Image (tube, rainbow, N blue to C red):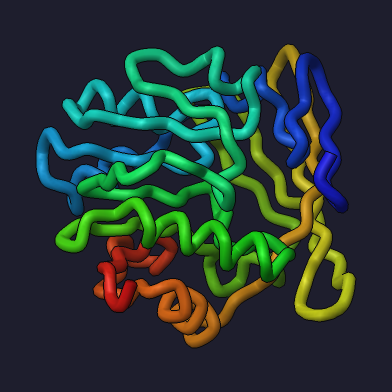
Length: 229
C-alpha cells in the first residue's frame, strides 16, 4: 500500500486504497460529457488513472480512441474497448507517443507527495501534442472543510460520504470516505493536499502547462494547454 492509504470492503484493494469492485460499480456521472465538450470528436485520449473503466467506457462509446493507464492489473482487467497500460503515472513510458488529449481525473493532482505530483504533471506534458489539451480534475474550494457531507450516486445505487479530513501537517489532510450500497460497504482512507487556485496554476506552470479555462461552473475541471516543454 502507498503510505497513508488504506481501504476495506469486499474484493481486491489497490495500493492507493481503492476497491476494484467498488469502482466497477460507480457511475461515470457527468465526467464523460465534460471531456467531450473540450475534445475534438474521434480524438486520441490518454486517460491517466483509469481505474476499472468508469469513465473509459463512456469515452469509448463516444468514439474516442482511448489509452487507459493504471498501476493496478486488477483494475485494468475490468477495462473494455480501450488499449490498457499498467504503470504508475509518474513513471509512464510510451516512447514518443503523443495524444490529442490527456485526462487526469480523480483529484490525482492533489497527491500529498510533491514529487509524485510533479511527476504526474510532467507525464501530462510529455504525452500531449503541442496543439492538444490536458484536462485536470481538482478539488472544490470547500472539499476539506465542508464535512461531513454526502451525495447519492443514483445510477449506481450508492451513498458516498466524506466523513473527515484530519490535518497531518504541511498542508496535508488524512481523508476518510465511505461508500454504502444495499449489499456492500467500502471505506477508504487517503492523503490529500489542498491547493489554492494560485498553487494549482503554479504546479501546472512548473510542468510546462498553462491553464486556459474552467470547464465546469464549480471550477473542478480545468483545461490546460502546453506551454514551454
